[in-house]
Every structure is written in structure tokens, then in C-alpha cells.
Image (cartoon, rainbow, N blue to C red; front, side, top):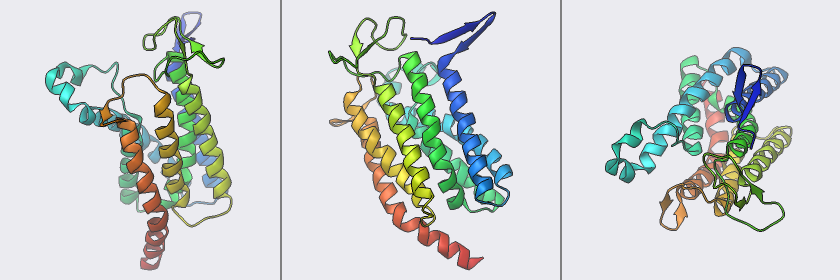
Length: 256
């Protein structure tokens, strides 16, 4: 795949390029929607949340990897400083949300309102990120004889010369679809917190299903992959928050 693009003396890695495009597209979407919804100081707050999501996300992806790989780390401590591999997307989601929540607390703005604003854009960014995975060959699928299978020839991650299910593109399409569904739902002006809660449910369900098609090593909890096990908790959290967040928001408004 096209893992690198060379323009004269400049070489661009498509994985990093797609992640960068995803972040920029997500920020632009949030900024536009925040202004349109006339959210107070949305530009300044979103800029802070943008960096909180990046920092919290990067730390979270690595930290969750350490947690799920404790047995392997005990056997081989060198894993701790091997930064070429070992990043768990769910850690990034959780880390980004927690650091953004702390930031909103410090700035004394409603986290729930920004939670709703940002999560459709998170799905958009993930869609771009998965395209980056496709170019790099990571997060690859199982071997297949189907017409839609793809074959890598120069990947450092996927087995080369084997026809594989394009799980990266399936995940990307699902992420873009989640983004569109959340935007459509947001136009109906639902109770605060429900757009973000639906993201957790939709993404958790989608990730649980795609995991059956993947073949790369992801750890396991019993007969489930680590990500499937976490997906169950994420979906459950989304269902609970769907009911709780509107009440929390209303109570906070009354207390002001």
C-alpha cells in the first residue's frame, strides 16, 4: 500500500498524514458547529479541548496497552519502551474524554455540552485514522477468498501476499456512518448528553462486530478479544449515560 508519499525531498507517511487530516477535519467541524449553536467561548474552549484530546488520547492509548499487556511486560520489560507498536484505541477515547472533562472543570464550562459537540467529530477523525491504518497495513483482517479481499505487498504489519478482509476500510466506513448518524440526531435537539452517549453505544457495537473479522494480535479476555471485552463496558456506559447525563445537566443548570 501507499505508506509513503514522496514529493521531491519531502516524504510523507500516509498513516500520520491521515491522522493529521482527521484531527483538522474534526476541529473544523466542532468549530463550525459551535459557532452555529452560539456556544459561549466555543472557539477558545475547543482549542483547549483539541490539545487535551491529543495529549490525553496519546497517553491513554499507551497506558491501556500497558494494562492489558501486564503478563507480557512482566516477561519482557523492554515492551515498556518499544514505542513502534502498542497503542489501544479505546485508551485514547477514554483518556481524551477524561482530560477534556478535567479541562472543562478548570474552565468552569459545561462538559456535557462540549461532549455532545465533540463526539461526532471524534468519529470523523477515527474514520480518517482507519484509512491511515489501511495504508500502513496495521489492524488487518483475516485471510479470505472473497472478491473484496485486499493483498499487501510491502507492509511491515500485515502478512504480505495474502488476500485479507479490509477491516480497516470497514471500520472507516462505520466511523463515517456514526458521524453522520450523530449529526442527524443532533439536529433533532435531543436532551443534553445523548448524542455523546449514542457515540459510545454505536462505536462499541461496531467495534465488537469488526473484531470478529480481524486477525492481528489484540490480546484476549477469555474467548473475547480485549477490545470486545472493553466494548461491552463502553456500550453499557453509553446506555447508562443516555439516561443519566440529561439529569446531571439539568441539575447543574438549576444549581447555577
